[in-house]
Image 1 (tube, protein in one colour):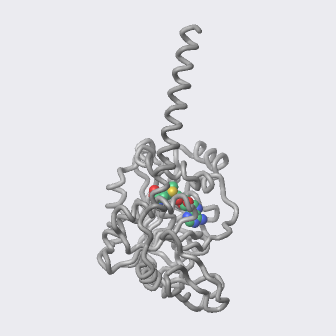
Image 2: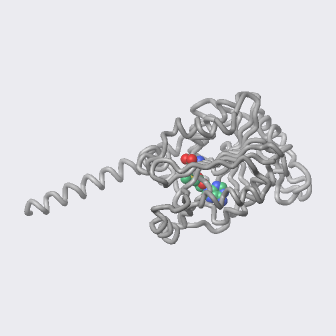
Length: 312
Ligand SMILES: C[S@@+](CC[C@H](N)C(=O)[O-])C[C@H]1O[C@@H](n2cnc3c(N)ncnc32)[C@H](O)[C@@H]1O
């Protein structure tokens, strides 16, 4: 074999080795939530009882669900149907609707592991702030303190959820909602590792939030808006469940006015169904839903944007 052939074989062998290593690691990491200590019935029940007054099942929009005595789920007071709560996740999306390319992409053990592992590298590539800075910025808006209740929409692998849960403390409650079971499984791993038991994870859809109207005062949505196929509907839902005075902190792939990357961003949207949310229009949509004090920024070259607003 000539020199070029040798080099190619070496590259192929190294790539295959790296892929196998990454795959095996992702599988091992994904086992953790399943091998994590099974939550006691008393603890599961406590957690569900804390959240139940806020929750509404699609079949009983007027009444809160009943908590099963053994903490294994919620019962609809109208139909008697049970929504299971297992492995720390409330299964509200038993038959999920169609997924977009990006939604599907983040719903496998491997991609969830890779996103979790390489999120920082990815954000750095887009010139976005470090995670600690993102948290500080969202915390400036949300002011999460002991005893608070917060909804983390599109919580994914739980990076922000963990931060809010630490701040909300034992008296507080954080609800992490996501479309991807693989991402929620990772969130569960992190929560177990941090010993946080003030979080309820929900396998649900941001377009149909399972909450009563006006019950939440703090909503975070980091990295979710660009994945929602119908962002106006998700915003309507966030506004519906938010109380007057409630705050919203969000980050998303975004587009600014006179954006230099518009053509590339439109291509991303066509190719990957990854929306770049126009931040000025987002403010107008939120104003139409009763939000004021809108702020936005598009730091570091203009790919990933940050927005906040308060419901009046
Ligand atoms: C890029 S990840 C963000 C995860 C995490 N919040 C972060 O900032 O790193 C986007 C998340 O949005 C979730 N997602 C997409 N569509 C959703 C929907 N309709 N309802 C709830 N979550 C959704 C995906 O499953 C994924 O976990």
